[in-house]
Image 1: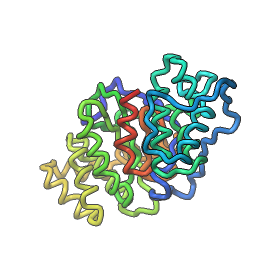
Image 2 (image 1 turned 90 degrees about the vertical axis):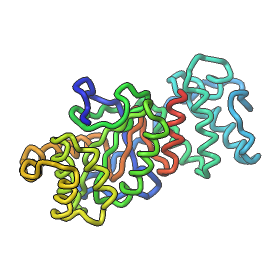
Image 3 (image 1 turned 120 degrees about the horizontal axis):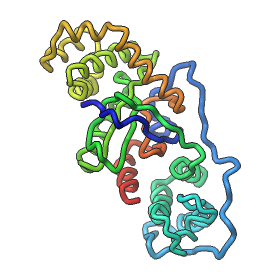
Length: 299
């Protein structure tokens, strides 16, 4: 299924890797695109917040809880108020994202992240300064078009980390059916010789309304991506083979894949898989994606 014409642009924040070191590295011409929080506004001084009724910290050790207290007093409200997230919650400022943000800090601490990493994750998720827009016009999408959460995925069919992320994305779609949409963007790396042909095969299958079926087959058979394998998958899907072969070799198909990749470069993609969730960078381990989406739905 392809994205309807009204799906033109999805706001996103510059994205790092899907997990700590667990990604296929980008091409040599793709430089780093950091999104540090230097120069970020600091919260106004006020009474130190020691606890929040809305946030359960019982699973944290005493030392971890001290870190959480420091963080809720140091990190800005996710709604852009010049106050801390802790004060935003305690004073009932009406920022719906503040309670989930304070809970998010609990989860990151419980997951074992160091304080600097937590601050980076928080900034990536809530700092508006790094928001950009990704052009997704014409990209295939899966899930509800009216979903509360949109995930934009840049992926490479030959990347093993993309293959490992595939069932996680499927799980998210099943668990939050009707509330999540996934938009797929091609990002074949030059270091993977079969990635570009596989991407062209997916585009060609999409021309016959079988993109997602081909997408799933490619990820399920990442070790079999030679041309004969691609044609076998097309036959399994009942495609018009003459049209499939012509579309695979057409310059228009190549241009579509390259356009996706250029879009990713402009957004700061440096490796695959890369995910953007509701305009926010997903930079945690793949196992956290389900919880991350749950938190996004809670805002």
